[in-house]
Image (cartoon, rainbow, N blue to C red; front, side, top):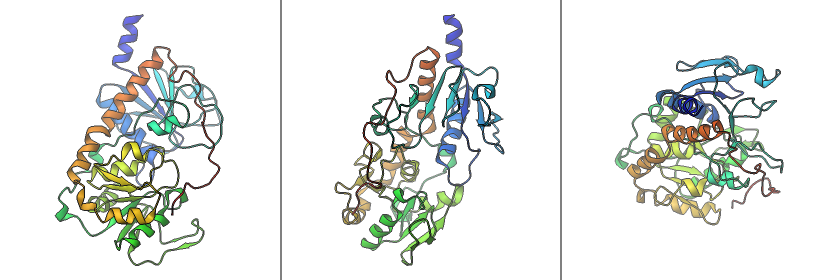
Length: 341
C-alpha cells in the first residue's frame, strides 16, 4: 500500500475545477492562476485535467465541462487522484481534495477544513495558517525593461476600476498631487458604476481592459504601480506582475500588501494617506528595478506556487485535513471601505 501511495505522490492526476472558462485573454486573475498552476504541474511530470465552463480549451491538459446543476461527484472523471476546487461546489468530493479561496467573504460561516488561502494575512483573518502565494509564468510576460533610462514618464494602476475597493479614484488623486501622469489598465473614463464618475483629468489615460502583449507593454515602461486599495487584498496579482517588470509598488497597508511589498520593492503608507503616497512616488528612482524583478523570480513564479500545492495534495492524499479546525472569519468588517484620505 505504501509503495502505491509513493507512486501516486511521484506522479498525480489532479483535477482543477473552476466555474469560468479558460484560457483568459484579458481580466481574470483566478483563471490565469489555475492555467499557470496546471502548466507547471504538467512540466513537473504530473497529469492535469480541468473541469471548467463550456467553451474552454487547453493544449496541455484534458478539459471537461462543469455543470453546476448536476451532483459534483458525477462530474469527476475516472483516474483522478486529487481534486483542486477553486469555487464552491454542490457536494463534498468523494476523493481527496483541497479548495482554494481566492476572494473575501464578510460573514462568520465555517469554511471547509481543506480550505487554502492565497496569503498569510488572508489565512490569518480566518484563523488559519494554510496558504499558498500565487505565482506568475514569466513566459507570459517577456523581457522586462530594467534600465531607468528606458522608462517612460507615467505610473500605472492595474485592476478592475469599476470595483470601488480597488480605489482608482485614489490612484488618480495621488498621481495628480504628485504632478505625474497615470495610465489606468482596467478602467474607462466615464464609469457609471463609480457613482457616475466622469474623469476629465488630462494627466490620466484610460486603457480599458487589456491583456497579453498590450497590457505588458504598458507596464513594462511604467515608473511604478499606484495601488491604494481600500479592502484587505487577498493577494493581488497586479503586485507581482508589476514587480516582475521592475515597477516598485506604492499602496495602502491592507491585506496581503505588507507581506508582499517589502521595503526594498515599494512603499506602503502608514496613514492610508494620498499625500504620503504622492510624496513617496517622488522617490521612485530610489528603488532598483532589477531588484524588483529578481524578487518576483525568486519567490512568486508558477513553479514555487506549484511546489507548494503539491505538498498540500500529498497531505490530503495521506488523509490529513489542512486545517485542524474549520476556518471562520475572525472579525466582521462593518465599514464598506477601509480608510483612505
